[in-house]
Amino acid sequence: MTEILVTGATGNVGRQVVAGLVAAGGSVRALVRDARAARLPGGVEAVEGDLGVPGTLERALAGVETVFLVWPFLTADGASAVLEVIRSRARRVVYLSSSGVDDGAERQSDPINQLHADMEDLIERSGLRWTILRSNTIASNTRGWAAQIRATGVVRGPEIAATAVIDPRDVAEVAVRVLAGDGHDGATYVLTGPQVVGRAEQVRAIGEAVGRPLRFEKVPVEAAREQMLADGRPPALVEALLAGAEARPRSELVTSTVEEITGAPARTFARWAADHAGEFR
Image (cartoon, rainbow, N blue to C red; front, top):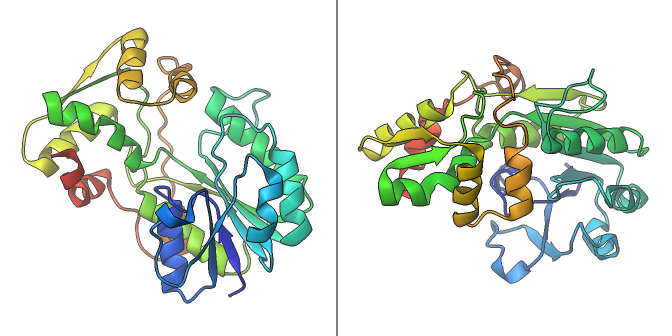
């Protein structure tokens, strides 16, 4: 396995990707903003850099052939410069995108899907070999409800359409196979969990995991905005998450891609909740 650079290495998916590559015997480098605070597995080289400042990436990219790219911004501004730096050092990029991207749409349904569509377009035209991983809603996003659950037992928010929520471990395991293997160039893989689950079902599953009844309470978007800001989420992110929330259609999309690539079926949301119950108690 060649040298692989993982961006977003301290995030919900990136940290799992790093651990999986190490377990597979890979040579892994992690791009981080603070190497002392990264707390990565042994054998991983943490190199400081910032995707927002392309000139800081050159040291991290030295000797790297493949990059796992998680884009941490809400627009693709600056991405062309980053991809140019990557192309000057590496040969391949594996990008974590969204299953909500609609290939046939002139404009995407919301700002986050538009970001990912723009990034995919830039990557495909970058001259790099590429693979796109379009992930459905990631289960660990529900960690944002933890304060409400501990304080009141009620999660208040907009009724965003149900999707086949995916465990970040499954996204990471697919990423590890793609990063470490051959035959994935030019492929776009859509990754989902095994079943469509709405917010009320997710809250119930967390309640079963922690051993007490919880409930979801639908509130108007403006009230949801106030709650999300109170939970400490960045204002720009809140606006992106809420854009078109009530108009977004329910998705029945369920794929078998996780099992096809990893050999194991995708984990259920209930399993994720059970494995992370301590975070909600």
